[in-house]
Amino acid sequence: MNFEKNIVSRYEKLATEIDDEEVLIDFVESGETSFENELSEKHKILKADIEEFEINLLLDGEYDMNNAIVTIHSGAGGTEACDWADMLYRMYLRWCNLKGYKVSELDFMEGDSVGVKSVTFLVEGINAYGYLKSEKGVHRLVRISPFDANKKRHTSFASVEVVPEVDENVEVEINPADIRIDTYRASGAGGQHVNMTDSAVRITHLPTGIVVQCQDERSQLKNREKAMKHLLTKLYEMEQEKKDRELANERKSQVGSGDRSEKIRTYNYPQGRITDHRIGMSIYQFDNFLNGDLDEMIDNLIATDRAEKLKSTEN
Image (cartoon, rainbow, N blue to C red):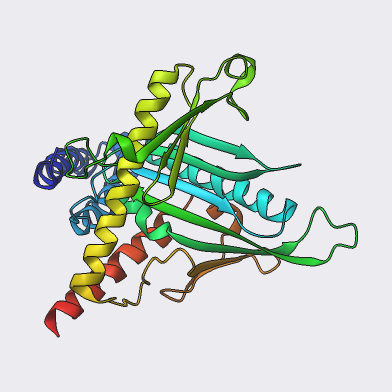
């Protein structure tokens, strides 16, 4: 489904909702007060759907409609950082659930005592990449550590990578001689069965040093197919970044460049505040945010990015 078909489909859905609400309005205005509660609920849903439709109009990038592959890496700091990476992982899982997106875990490396060192997962659904691409960068947590007996304040970091899942027909060539494929026993959240066989697959692209892993499936063949798709995506991203540097010569927008080393957001637990440094926006619904209520922040990032791109084309 291309961008235009998606927009038409969503527009037709909105038109049907508007027609339904107009019927309810007629009933209420004619004295059928029993429909007032239904009208109120329908109006809330319609308002939210219109706002979502307006954001979808902005997601017209070449790969915005694609699925997204997300990787979270814990930063330095051992237990604290691994716990923070796990908190981010749960946050995105809850957001995906609220959006109706399907999530498949591709790779998981648990922390030494708690949390995760790294996790890679596939998010499937229309505009998954368009929404999640603004999450790329370094996320910082400030809190009173639950692991410190002295209750000192700690700062933890985790990086988030987001790339679009690309189709096999994308023009990225992989020479079989340039890859090394290793198999190993799966670990982590796979249960007893996956630990009994060498079903997990690790692929190393020798010229670039890129390493991808997959242990999601019990079948080694399926894990190999998923890992190859992930490698294709990584190589594609590398080519795109090279092309972007050549064409744009490092365009810096207000929303940020998305560089992996860039600190994009601070989660200040003692103050109950989450601040995105790229747009200077703060949200004071800390628990709701970590429970997946990200849309207000993401929508503002999308709108600001679009405004900056339009401004740059005018100059």
